[in-house]
Length: 231
Image (cartoon, rainbow, N blue to C red; front, side, top):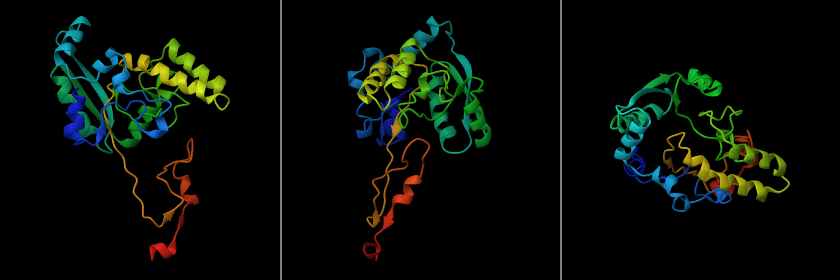
């Protein structure tokens, strides 16, 4: 998949090429490592190389590619986005058929992890790094059913140090990410920029959308309106 082309043409430059699972933003400073500092094997995942892809397919026993299916919700832009991804994959012989589902059915499939093969979904690690959902099998947030001794060790480090020695588990999460990315169990696509815009008379607001775990939109109770400024 030509991820750089997605940044430049699909998002018109308004996206980060390397933003899984953590973003290049202040909140993720303890966990984020720039792509330029990642191992060469990880950096290669973000380069467009159809010839290398065909070579790997041949080595894996699929010289003519293969067919696969991907579950996607009919709500939102994901089906259209996947149509672009499908064209990239077809160039190396991978025929990815879209299984478009109603949003309720899709969510049931996603939560129960009953998708036939592939699935497109968002991630939870950026907002809940202390849960590392995507890298432990016992979490419904793990779409690939992949984990390793290293990721389980990180999960234990979090259990032992959360709220006691946060710097220790911060480092453990950051240090395991090159290993996680190197497994290439997903196609980690660019992440578009998001902007929160509000009137200057909305006070005690700094762009939040949550005040903690499963506390979406509850910050609204802390806002107030400067009526004079609004007038």
